[in-house]
Image 1 (cartoon, rainbow, N blue to C red):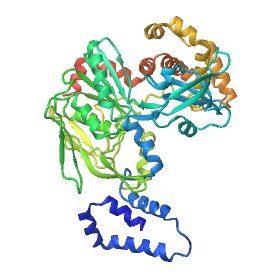
Image 2: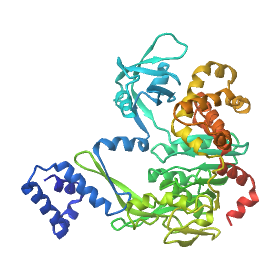
Image 3: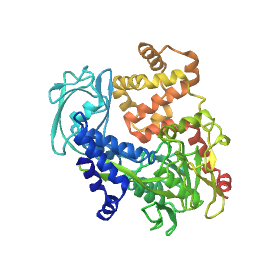
Image 4: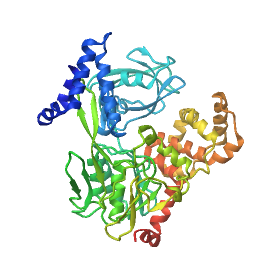
Length: 525
C-alpha cells in the first residue's frame, strides 16, 4: 500500500506505533484500502496519494508543501549554490538562443563563447526559429560534469558558424548580486538569496570593501525571499559581538533552541544600514530583525513580507519531497514576524497586493495587520513590532514618479532588453576600445537619441503604440536601465547596479542617512 509506505518513511518508529492507535490514521488506511480494492474503475494510485498529501498540507500553513520528484533538484539548485552545465546566462530573443553572458570561470568562457553569441545548433540539431523554450535549453545544455556538448554559434562580424565543444562542469550560482563602493566611505552589498555559498561570498566582498576604506555598509535585502536559516545566522553573526542571541526557534515537537553569535563578526563596529521591502522574507527578516533588536544598525524601506516559519525537508520514496513547517522563529526581543494565515492560502498570498490597495507602499501610516504586538529593542529600548513582518526604522515609500504604463509594456514585452542587446552587438568593439574601464563609461556615456528612436520603433512593431507622455514620465528610467544593461554586458552585475541604483529613491535615502551621523544615531535611540 503506497500511501501507507509514505507515512512509514516519514515517521520515526516510536511515533508510527502511536499513530497506529490513532483513529484518524486508521481511517486513512481503511479509506485507501477501500478505494484501491473496491472502487468501480482503475485508480491512479500515484495521483491519488499526491492529492491526499497535498490536501493534508493545505490544512496546515502556506509554506508546508509537496514538491514533485522532477522539481526537487531544480528548486534546490539556487540554494545549493551550483548546478552542472555549460555556464551561460541566456535569453530567447526573436526565437533565437542568445548568450547574455558566460559565467566567469565557467566552461563556456574558457572555450571562448562571448556575450551576444547566437547559439543556432546544439550537437548538430537546429535550435533556431523552432519555438525554443527555456526548459528545452536546460535539457540540452545541462548535464553531468565531464560530458561534452557542441554548440554552433553565429557571431556578428564573423563569417560562417563557429563550433565550440564545451565540457560540462559544476557551475556556481552566485547569491551576491553586487558589491562596490557607493561613496569613498560607504560600501554597498546586494544579496539575492541566502544559499549554501552566501556567507563565503559575503565575507569575501566585505573584506575587499574594507581594504578600499569602507567606513559604512549598506546591505540591500530588497526582494530577497530568503533561503537557508544557517546562511542567515552566519550573515547576522558578522554584525554582532560574541554571545548575542540571533533568534530562537520553537515548535510543538521542536523544543526551544537559541542561536547565538559566536566569533564576533567582521563588521561589528562600522555603521550598518539594511534596506528591505515587501519582497524581503524569511532569512532576510532574520538578519534585519537581529540587527534591529540589538540596535546595531538602521533598517529602512518598507515592511517586509512576514514569514516567520521554519521548514524542514523530508524525502519520500519516489524522490518527491515534503517541506514541512516544524517551528516558528522569533527575533532576539521575542517577537514573531509571521503574518496571519487564518483565512487561507489564497488570501495569504494576495496580501502583498492588498498593501498596494490600502496605500501602505506609499504611506507608512497605512500599515495594517492583525495581532500587532509591541516589543522593545535590547540596548536602547526602542519600540518595535511583531505580528507581520519587520517594520523599518525609517519608512521610504515606493517611488512611482518615473513609472508609466508605456514603460511597463516596453519592459514586459522584452523590447527594451532586445534593442539594447542588438545595439551592443553592433557596437561591442567600439565600446571595448572607447571605454577601457567602468569609471570612464559611467561618467561619460549617454544613451544616444537614435537608440531611443529604435526602441520606440521596435515597440510599435511589438504592438506597443508610442506614448509621448509615458516617455516624458519614464524617459530617464528607460535610458538609465539601458545604460545599466550595457554595463552588465561589459563588466558584470555590480556595474549594472552601480548605474541603476542612484535613480532608486530608497538607495538615495540610504546614502544620505548613513552619511548624516546625527540622524542615523537618532534613529537608534
